[in-house]
Length: 329
Image 1 (cartoon, rainbow, N blue to C red):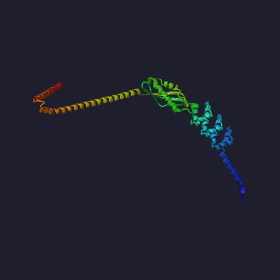
Image 2: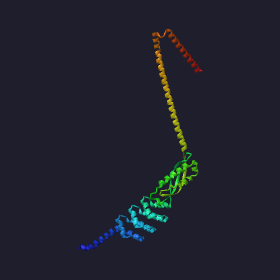
Image 3: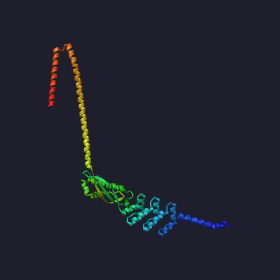
Image 4: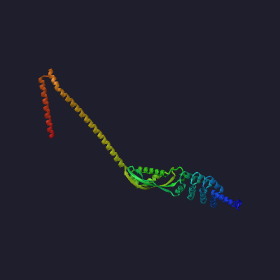
């Protein structure tokens, strides 16, 4: 009958196997061997410390091996501190290697600061070697003769490593170039000058030092296309003439309304005077009758009054006939 003593060797072997598996899982022995094979001296305790600090050893050791093979001097502490700060260790190491190959001075501290600032340090190094071309949209300016000129520019820029942290981006460069193009077109006496010498725009804009305070260095500004737009001066003159015409019409309408009001006022006054005359004429017979009754007026006086009225009416009739004849002729 088998006893517990018979199972003791198997039990101890199982415990040893489990311990070895746990140890290999916690300590990246394969990574340690790879580092030793690459000539990078890393102790087992350093890898264990990374595990305890919740640092993935592969994220630090593999870039360290890459830097060592490329001849870039970095330490484990630098890489681990950058990882703990939330940076991309592999990208920074790649940028350091690319900068060394291109003879660009870039320290690990500068590269780590650029990476932590949110910029792609590797892309910046590549842009320093291979400049980037930024194309602006059509920028419209108006020459002194009122003709609109549209220009499209191509800006060749190179990344400025020293100003990547805190420097302005592409939008600022495009805005400054657009401002310079508008100013140059506006200072031209005629749009023909701009069409004949489009390079004058690039020269004037380039001499302004538009890359100050930006993360780029402007190498050249080339005018890709120039086009003639609207005649803004003629449009403004037309709009001004239309406005003047509307003002003149409004003033004429105002004068006409005042004339009509004055005429209506005169007609009202004439009608009022006629009404008073009619009212006065209505009182005449009553006054005559009263004068006759009171003896202030005799019969002969009344007859003379009638004769005078008849003579006046006859003269009025003759005058109207004469006016009608003259109108007919």
